[in-house]
Image (cartoon, rainbow, N blue to C red; front, side, top):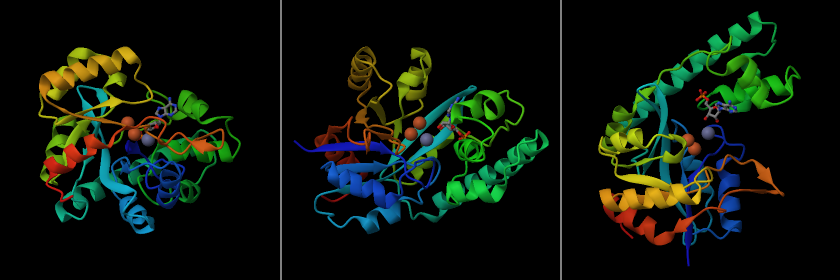
Length: 276
Ligand code: AMP
Ligand code: ZN
Ligand code: FE
Ligand code: FE
């Protein structure tokens, strides 16, 4: 049977592996398809496709994970088969990148005022210029020896409510769904298990989401069963993946450790109107 891991981050957002390395690992792990789903950016997609030497074997699905806000909760919306060359769509993403950049500048100023001497240049080198976020700032702080681990950075400095935390612009969940659909993509609610509130899950689905991420490392068996039933009831596409950020475990990334049947990809593809 062929398998797909539909939730993977690259260094275009906060993943540690470059798009090329992601492709190499996916080939090594004999996956049939992978979804490149970086936070708020598509800039990992082209490099991944270009480095895929065996397009007959490994299929690269263009995707995105939009970070949104739903009544104060952080909700992630996946989009699959988006037209990642659509100018209107790219303009929206560009605006989000700019807002992330400006916010990073403010956060670094706040850290500097607290005696944490990190520079924008260092953070940009870590983020490799795209979709700059708190994890990159945290890594810069670890590199400079101000803290022992990234978790410390969030606990003491850049977590919500901490002295150097700065809010960033977020789309509403409804806007994200509309943007994904308008860009020709299929909207899928990411890791609903993390929402931890069945009423919210249900009302988000009612916004017109087309699919639901059933398999995810943070979902236990009960959650998977619950989400499968929900998908059936509401006639939603089912997706799944590792949410791989390239962290190594026993010398390997977790990519492919959770995967879904390739038939689910065929269903998505058909709906998106992609030729076999
Ligand atoms: P940003 O989008 O820049 O606000 O950063 C959000 C990202 O930071 C999330 O996707 C997580 O990867 C990471 N993150 C958020 N909170 C924590 C935390 N307490 N510990 C470690 N990483 C976190
Ligand atoms: Zn991430
Ligand atoms: Fe997520
Ligand atoms: Fe993710």
